[in-house]
Length: 90
Image (cartoon, rainbow, N blue to C red; front, side, top):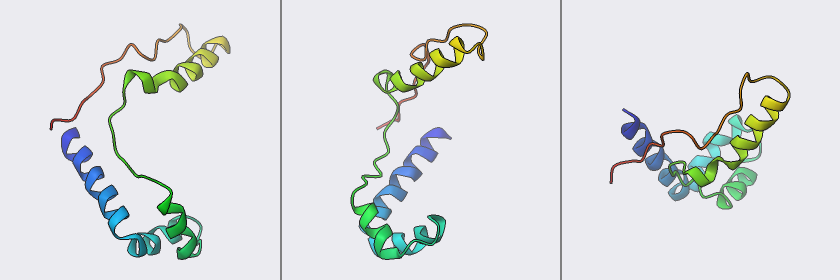
């Protein structure tokens, strides 16, 4: 199931990059009715690359967990890197 979602996201990202005018028309109302030309320009600077999370990507989540623990919003310290990470099949 997750594999299917991952590949669907990859396909949609590819479509966004190869159909910039159509993508801008679709995203414009979702982005507060921005002019499609502005959306197209913004999209030209984005990769929309889909990639799995790695342990190195979890630093920001660790900082958030530390702040929540210090504020006593978490009952114990959390190690954000102590997780199983999913990897897509080739």
